[in-house]
Length: 628
Ligand SMILES: Nc1ncnc2c1ncn2[C@@H]1O[C@H](COP(=O)(O)OP(=O)(O)OP(=O)(O)O)[C@@H](O)[C@H]1O
Ligand SMILES: NC(=O)CC[C@H](N)C(=O)O
Image (cartoon, rainbow, N blue to C red; front, top):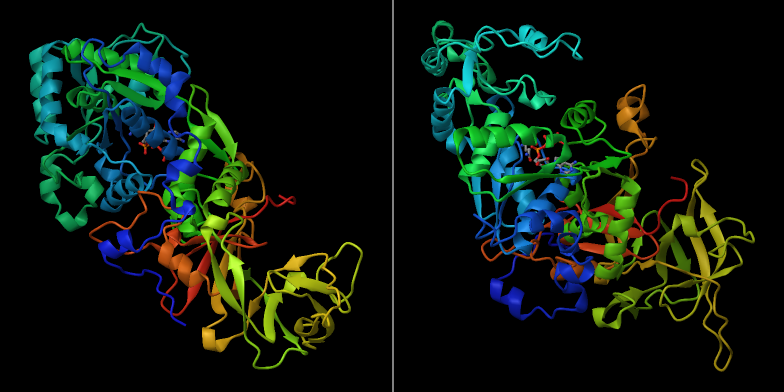
């Protein structure tokens, strides 16, 4: 048996020989209206405040500004859909901007993974930029701010600054520090000294001269620049190998050019301004920062974009924070950031969740200022609904028991037609039916009972699409394990002219037919919730105390019907532009080979599959498990 997991084909073949069944329509046809969140409600109001044609707005410009310090998760897909979608809907542009102002936490792998996920979700940035692209310009603006008496160099310690800000929860009145009124020229030369490495971390800061009287903490003289690299004289005494990269403050892109780095509060609004962003859409935790955003642009007399804030998407039943996911990985509870039990976007992709299902889910939630907290099972329900309309069907037996149908000849080979879907336009495929078939262990019981309508000794059951039913006649067991190892059965083909009695139920099955390479053997990974409670994030004993030991169930001897070959040939299924084989790299990613295992679950190929071993991930079960 040869399964080509990443079949290669020429671009022409892909286009011409591809008879597109209705399942392979673009994502839009199986999603909610992907633009509804822009038509009315919060985002429509935001647009109406500053529509195209209003002063300074020829074209809508937005940005998605992740810090390249971790992998994106399901929550980020809301910010992606909002920013890219808003621009797209209004015929504008959206930048992907890496907010890379903290060299200690940034790594190359995150830059690549973030860009990859945005592409996977089907969005294309008009341009990819970095806050660090503007470090020179930001430095000039910082000097300008000092000259405008809008910033000063301060040498206070962290605890002194906390006292100046009212000490803890405002225990004491706020007060200005002694550096606040130093002459502009002195701040300017001290700032240059910071730039030139004459101060080490914490020894000097550039602080904005804002409004200590304001009720908004975001106006209490926030830091604009801090020193990250050690003082030049200290650095010269150490060799490079004696210092960790982050201690030196080596930036992934600008190297060791800078000893000082601008903060988020200084950088974000100014880069928005430099890029001509019209609508800076972010989450509500930045609402209070809007005042300082506006203050800084106005103080410098630069163009001021409009910041507006929407509610975050929170998931319950799992953890999303980088620190917690790291702990899950280092404690061996999950294998890596793309472990399908996680809700990072790379994990969801690997698990087979189509990008259209994610966008459909986010769009269905709508956008307002309120935080939306959604249980992971609600998300799964949405994925299930999406897949039901979108993928074709095969037979998958997770835990097979052989059934010998004794009254069928050994060399019997009959081809049975299996539709790919209830929708006839999906077409069908043919599978062999022979004397030996496999059924799932859960479809057989040693004794009959009123509530069990599948196979038991003496009762009949239908095999899906096989003309007549089978009746179990006897079975064999392994004396050590007590497990049933073989079932004998009789094929209930009626005599000429006799009536066939329809069985009460039908089960899935796969024939043993080596000449047609049936069955295709597979390892199936079923995923269950990672935690035993709905609120691992806030559990009093910590999230690591509520790990579900059965979050991954492995079925090493599973079987798939031979229709899998056709599904692989036709992947991605459902067809989404972001998943379609690109012209320069004509391979189909394993997770786009998706199908419903009839009566079992939705599956996709895992990337651990190879030419001779198939590994399936369960995307979601067919129905929500009532026990959960
Ligand atoms: N759960 C969420 N729901 C909606 N938007 C989010 C969510 N998490 C992050 N974002 C938004 O995505 C953008 C880029 O996020 P960035 O990676 O810098 O965020 P973050 O807050 O550090 O994320 P996290 O700490 O959850 O990993 C920001 O505009 C941020 O507001
Ligand atoms: N304004 C924003 O969207 C904030 C982006 C920033 N990278 C953060 O999440 O911290």
